[in-house]
Length: 228
Image 1 (cartoon, rainbow, N blue to C red):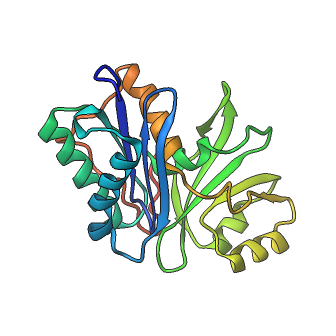
Image 2: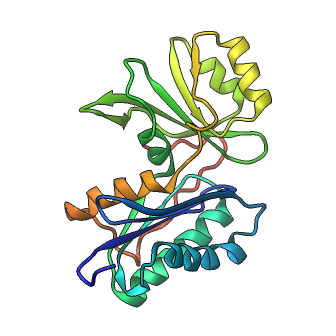
């Protein structure tokens, strides 16, 4: 790439689904998504090297870092956050933290019904975020909370669009007990780092960056909501 090109590296290790993307403001130069069985530490750095090689991008061309800030797995979030913050501090680059559920929501079609985005939260529970369509984008409308699938179903009293990390059994069960639910397809429910990169790029270019020293992951515990 040319010396004047700006590239943002996006890292998402919120759950067992890991995502990386390289983005230049106009193109997703490289993107990869895979499922890791708790090998984040071993897999992440080599995957970044491979992405740079495939996109023919020099590490010096990375002008900003984006990282998914959670909620998600304690270990996964810590690994991704530590690597992104380390790169930002070492190379004096801006860093942008983006809530993980916002990444998932941003990939969904805009509808006139609420959107519910979910992530695995361990022990069969789900981190749940509610969104409404405003100003041509999905905006968080309620506190993020950790619920069981049953508790989520109990909250659904109107047509909603649900996307995210649901097992096949959960998808079948929710469809049966909540017939008003529209379920996103498996492909639509896959969290992609390209969307993280787009969200972070917009914030970076409007000066909305984070302090790498104070940026920290969002951790949730059962029945402990946080502001959306």
